[in-house]
Image 1: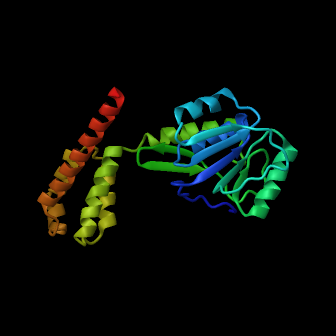
Image 2: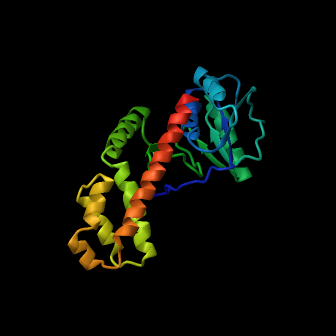
Image 3: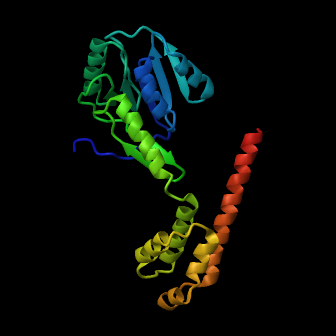
Length: 239
């Protein structure tokens, strides 16, 4: 495996996209989900790119300019090469290599030194898959399948188990992973059911250093956080 999927910190980073057509748009729609500041340069733009600039005026910028092989780019953290001109893309790729800039060329499978993975996300779970060897139709099919797959995971259960695990680690409880796995596969999906499980006699006997009160505090804290999140979402919708 040549390209290793990794998580790239986009906070405070700048990305330059060369090209304003559908090829560029396919990457921009992935980039817009990040914290990149996105700069797009091309001689013209498809309507959706213009619309995105209006939707994200603080971090999405376009500049209409005729790109030539003499175009020089610098001071960017990441470069997307996606014009509709093969020779132009080749020239930009050579310049990117000499400049040691992280780049991806999108029109062909090249020697790009960083690939932008396609991403499927639901709440706290994010999956990335490499699609550079797939045609767009297959990419869309796989992405739809992964989105259905993520629907199998209960977000409330995951959040509760994360909170419980943190408390178990704090108390230095043995066999933490076995405890979490046991709770997960019992298919309890509500906070009340998890709390009931933790109060069972067998669990207390095996892990007597876990206090019910502490677990209740974990669950109540989660309830408060969840309530605050919902209030914030409701406020945003009103605005």
